[in-house]
Length: 129
Image (cartoon, rainbow, N blue to C red; front, top):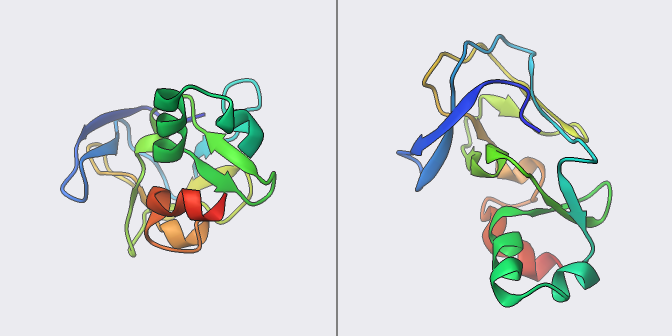
């Protein structure tokens, strides 16, 4: 669940991005896993979904190392884009924090290698399942 005010918009990185709608100081929690809000799905549960629903999971979820399941954010957190120079850190389980002060209007970005193990992000999810 996003813990800060954000908005989505056109990204210069890729398609749609997530942007700060408030000043975010360094160290602030930006996103936190909330069990009754964010969705954890096993491979078997995903396989039982309709084709369009499976496509959504494969496009926007990631395989969570801690739980061994697909984690699908229920809010706009799915629009974090990748950067080798991230302003948000996702290396801790269940939490994303600001690596530096983030200005209003700045895109929130993470390094996909931190939790995917590659920079292809969502496109590699089927290979990992």
